[in-house]
Length: 460
Image 1 (spheres, one colour):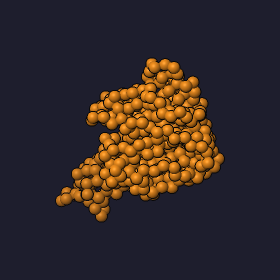
Image 2: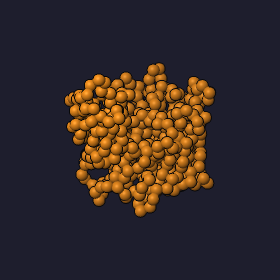
Image 3: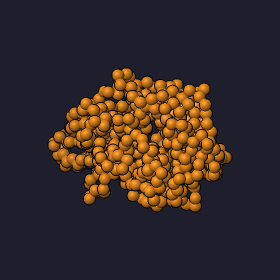
Image 4: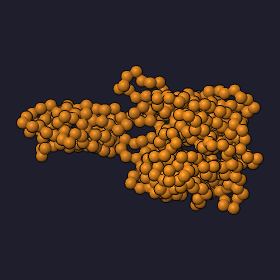
């Protein structure tokens, strides 16, 4: 996989208002894995990977079923995608891991259809996209050259066009050898761009303003780490995300969120230990979202005292100065993954205890914290007989469960299981050898939950 020293990568089947929740929060199960989401006015736009099928982009508004805007052939978790939306426009970009189909950018009206406006035979990093009203920004160029074995980055430009194909288009070349990795767009066809600058063993990052007059000189420069514009608050305060220092091996929750007030050069840190995922380390982080008044972040808690405990991940909302901190969600074994905010709503997704995901949409009026419960299994069987080389073990799964059973006496090493909510029978193939009775000991490794150890008296 070609990424020029970049790491590997970096979603509704039901009504938006369906699911379980309080009056100000909905939790909706969806099939497959959620990859990205964005608010577009009253609508929620979701990029989702159905099991065994290509990724789709869907749009849902309250009181109506979701509509599919784009169907793709993308099936790899390493395929990079970017998504941006407003009440008037929608932008979607993808960069396949195997360069088939070519990387592309698609834009159009909020309800579709979308048209392709840029492509790369050999993409190095997914094109950033940004939306402000009916105007859309994306990257043109920045492809790997030569296409069959890239050793360089081709020239790139910031393009600002419209949801309507007939709207005027502005093209602003980006000078220098850097890779355009993030975009923030505001009214007036202006905004800020994040640029990565490959250097010896490291990556430098900078943020440049752009507008009708072109791309300006850097206003922020970082040596040895990426810096990305995450958004602009209503008062003009710039919100930036700084990746962890080069060589930091403590995980992906090392992003720092800072603000710079209009006309000032002093940075204010409003969030440390912010969690970015995959290519979010280099582009616009899905773990950070900005509205006119607030910044929403996924933040990691301190390391747990023992290996048996999981580090907590929180969705936190703060004002631009870091005040009025609200914890929207927290989880350990099962955590909030990506987050987005728009207007007075916040959304994130989390994995289910079986297959699929849960999509959470919350109004700012909701003040209670959502505790994301882990997936648990209880072993109810204490004694059993072996029949046909198998022993039947009764399991109780309060919210569904999936995982594997492992033990020295379990044939073929492990046994996969996946059950919905309730009590179920797991038939384990066992080998007693010459023994007629024994204590069968096994471990249940639970997806998104703590492991469970079982001990059953069995006999032939």
